Image (cartoon, rainbow, N blue to C red; front, side, top):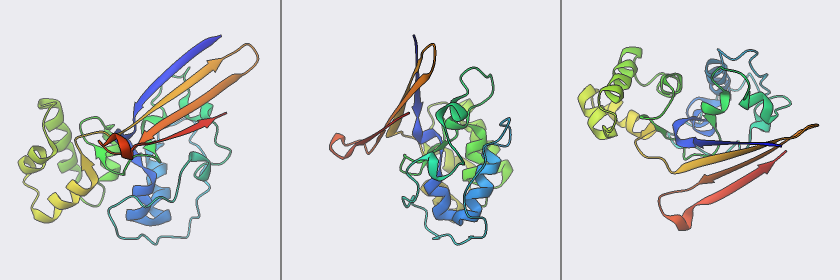
Length: 202
């Protein structure tokens, strides 16, 4: 039997609940289509299409706690695609972080999608370049150097972070007749007492 371990930083991914809070279900649908635009084939969504009501908040209100609520007939093998050489969807989306994205670790597509409507394409590109030029740059320093102005700087500060408090572990056991999947994710703060762990098995 073969064992595979996949360790991820959930704070480096686009949080489904955060997007839903900001843009509503209609906006979430569009974002998920963008985030898996290069997937072959893309996964089918089962979100309501005609609901564009967003809460207007910048905090992730928990509406989705697993991918089964988002995708049709969701299965771990559809997300992980361990034998393919393409970017996998589980590197880009999450249900379990606090909603903010670690701008130093996130996929460029994740940053662009999370900041769409708040920063311009050129500002997002410049932010990414800051990370490449100075890998340990803080969020405060990066935003200050962009000279965004008060409103955009506050928006960026509510969506981005430079720390990670949520991490996950996939364990895939490959047998001769079937595979087993186990997923555990820690979702909390820097204070250990407030950290929660969720586990899923298939």
